[in-house]
Length: 502
Image (cartoon, rainbow, N blue to C red; front, side, top):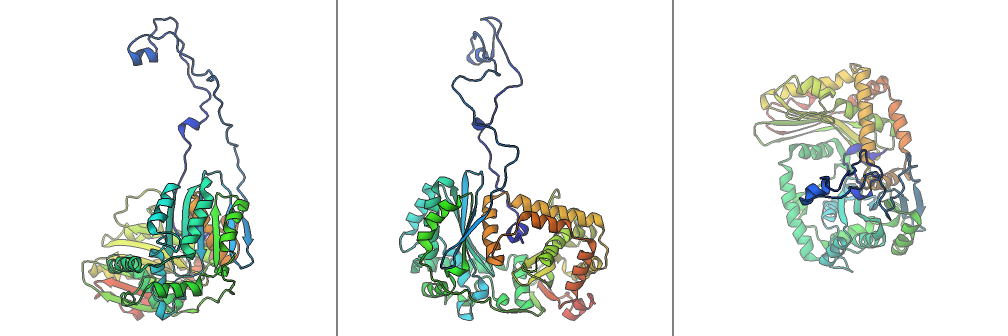
C-alpha cells in the first residue's frame, strides 16, 4: 500500500507569486503632514514628496482574487477501463501543473534469458525518436510546453511520465503515448545507449550498496526475481532494436497498462487518451512469472580498505497489506545511516541502528535497514560497512539487533517515533503531484484500485509492539540471504551467520 510514497522521498512544493498574495491591508501607514516632509519617495528621488498614500488604502481599479478556503476537500479519484482493458485514472488538484504517467506491468521478471537487459535498454530509449517524430523534434515540442519527462524500470513495472502546465494536457498525452507506442529504435540511437549502459554497468561495482542490493536478489531467489535489473555485460552485444520490438509486442498490451494523472479533469483526459489507445491489443493479462525464495550466499573479494555486507530475509509482498506495512515501519524503526551523517530530522540519529551500533562502534562506517518489496514477496535486511578486521564483529552486531527486536527489546517510544516518521514520509511525498500520479498508477497495477490514504494511516496507528516482535521473529526464522563485497576474507561462513538467528 502506498508503495511509491513509502519507498522514497521527494518534495516538490509550489508557491504563489508575491503579486497574488492577499496583502490587502498593511500593518502600518505613513501620511505626510506637509509638502516638505521627506517620505519614502522623497528619499528615493532625492527630493521631497507631497503626500504618501496610506498603505491600508485599496488601490483604485485593482481587485484581489478571493482567498482560498480554510479546508479544500481532496479530489475523488476516477477510474475508467476501456474495452481493450487499459485503465485511465485521474484526480484533480489546485496545482497549476499536471503530471501524467503511463505505467506498464512489465519489468525484468518478464525477461526470458534471451531478453535479459531489455527493460534496462527500454528505460534508456524512452523519449527517443518515434515513427512520427525525430528525437530533435520531440525535444523541441517538450521544451515548447515547458515539460519534464522521465522513465524508470524496476523488476515488476515500467513507468513513463511527463509533467507540465495543465493547459498543455493534450500535447502532453500525445507526446507520452507516441513515445511509448511508436518507438523507432534507430540503430545509431540504440548503439549510443548501449555504450552508455556498458559504462553504467561498470560503474555499478563502484557503488557497493547498489551492487549488494542486486546480489542479494540473485542469491536469495530462484526464478524471475533472480533476473538482473541491470543488463549483464554478456548481453550487451545481443541487444538491438528488433529484440526490443519483439519484447514490447509481447508485454506492452492494454490490459497491463494504466495511464494515471494528477491535476487533470477526468473527462478531459478521456477525450484525449481514448482515441490514441483504443486500438491497443486486447490480450488477456498473463500470469506473473514464478519466483521462489531460497536464501543463499554471495561473496566477491575485490580487496580494498572496507568490507560491505548485507543480511536479508524474505517478507510478504504488497498484496499482504498488513505485513508489508509492518516491514515498512520496521525499516523506519531500525533506520540507521552513515557514521558521517550530519544528523537532524530524517537522518536516523534517533533510530535503533544509529543509537546501538553507529554511535558505539567507530569501526562501523555505515549500517542501515532496507526493504525491497514486490507484489507477492520481498526482502528486509541490514546493509553495513566496516573495516575488514571488524567485519565479523559488525555482522554479529547486525544479527544481534534483529534478534533483540524479535525478543521484545523495542519499547513504545521507539515504535511511536517510527510510526510517526512513516506517516510523515508518506504524506509529505504525496504532496508532490508526480509521486501522487505514480502512486495511482502503481497501486492500480497491484490492487486494481487505489487504497485511501486514511486507511493506510489508520493501519499504521493500529500497529502494536507485539506486531513488530512477532513479525521480526517470523522473518528471521526463514533462510538467510547474505552478500559481501570488498575485503571479504574475514567474513564468517554462511552457516556461522545463519546460526546466530536460531
